Length: 269
Image (cartoon, rainbow, N blue to C red; front, side, top):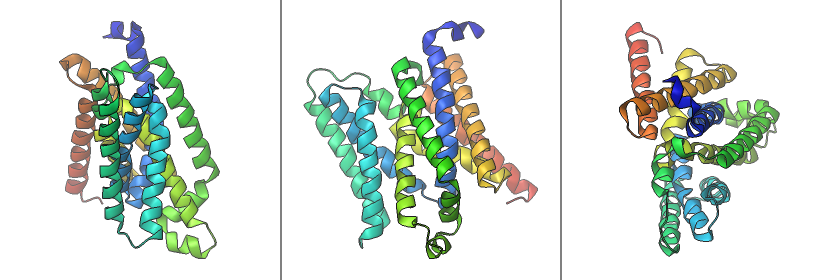
């Protein structure tokens, strides 16, 4: 087993898993605490439009994914908060429109479009060193923003009305959180793909919440669980010769069901 880590692609996969786990644990905790998993899924699927634009322009699809996912996050947030449009309607509109834009531009792209499957369902074994550097940069930005706004994020996560009454700019912070979710989606796309991003954003922090209600502890535990799932799924995908992204999510889902059942039987909340 140790021999496989001599290959550069496997080393890149391990680094990608660890870097993705950091962003997933931090931002996923906010997603679970604020119960905005559906919004996260909408941002993830809408971001597909950025991949299509990236292919059409002949650039790294992740470079197209970043601005498009940020645009989708801000669009969903503003449409649901500043208009009379219901939140689920806003999510559905951007979800469908983003996917449609992606399909349209991929169809317009000249020649054969390679590796599209990897962006939909993940392909951690094909992550190049250039993408690792980009993911590391996004991780650093996410950590710095959360560190700078930790108290404010904490306030709006547990009591948004009180925070607003106390003078906290809740709307601005809410949009900032959605943008951080969008950047985390970019980080996770190469690991598990757009289709399964929502699972990795919610399952590890949901498990972590069974063991602690403290947000900071949740973030640490969630990052640990996410790293465990990604590395375990990566190892099992190698052993059984199956898709790595799917195995990562199945590992996380099975663990969640076991933990939830154990807590239920023990009488814990």
